[in-house]
Length: 324
Image 1: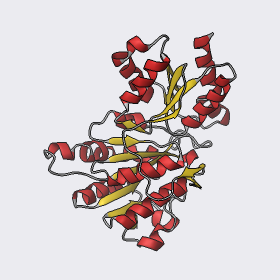
Image 2: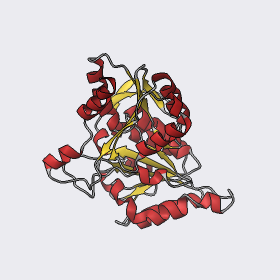
Image 3: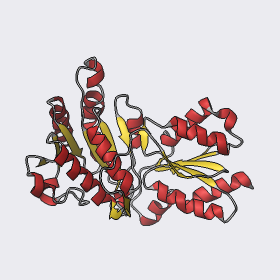
Image 4: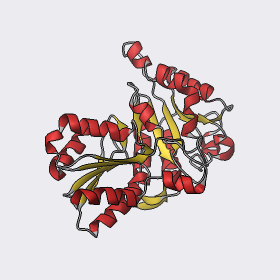
C-alpha cells in the first residue's frame, strides 16, 4: 500500500475512471490550463485531451447546466466548482434540475453527474471562500452527498460517485489536498452510504467527517490521558446517513457527540442528534453534545478566524465534563 496525497488520490480516481469509461469527462474553470488550483486534475489534459478535460467560462450556472445536459445525453460528467461557496450561483441547476429529473420523469432518465466542491476553512480566505455548506444539500431529495476525510476514501468515494447513476455532490476540504495517507493498490471503491468505524471504544460515540476527523482524533488522544475511551465514526457519506452504524455504536457507549466545521445551527450534527433522539433515546445516559462553528459568516481577521474554528480542546473539554 502506497502513501500519497489526497489530491493525488483523487487524480488517480479520475485517471482510472476516464480510462475505464470514455463517457467520463471533466469540466470547470482552468482545469485544462492549470490542472486545477489544487493539482487535482494535473496531467489529465495531456493524457485525455481538451475534449474530455474542458475549460469553461466563469459561469457556475453554465458549468452545472452543461453537466446536467451532458448526463441526460448519456455522458458521465464530473463538474468542478473551484470553491464550494460558488455553488449558490447554480442552485437552480443543482436542486431544481439534477436532483429532481429522475423523479419527475418517472425513473425513465438518470442524471449521473458528480459535482466536486472544495470547501472549508484555509487561512484567511474570509467569508466567501471558506464555507462548509454540506447541510444545504442534506435537505434536498435526489442528491447523494459524500465527504471524505483521508486519501483512501477520497479515491474510493470519487470512483463510486462517478459510477453511480444518481447525481452526487463530492465535498473535498481544501486543507486535505496536501494530506498524505495510505491508499490501496489496484481497484479501490468505497461504498456510498456506509460510515467507517475509525476507532472502537466504550465510553462515548463521536461522529464526524472531513477535516474535522483530524481535530476529533487529537481530542481522542487528550481524552485517553483521562481514561476516557471514545468510539469514533467517520460518516464519509452524509446523504444517505448510515443510521445503523451510529445507532449500534450509541447502544454500546450510551453517549454521543457530533463534531463538524460547519455552522452548528441546522448542521449535519442536528440531523444526527434528531435521528438518535427519535430512534435511540433509550440508549442515552447523557445529553447529546454538538460541536460546530458559531452562527456567523467566516471572519477574515486571523484572531477571529481562530476563535471561529472548532478545536480539539473544545471537544475534549465538552466530553470530559460528561464524566466529571
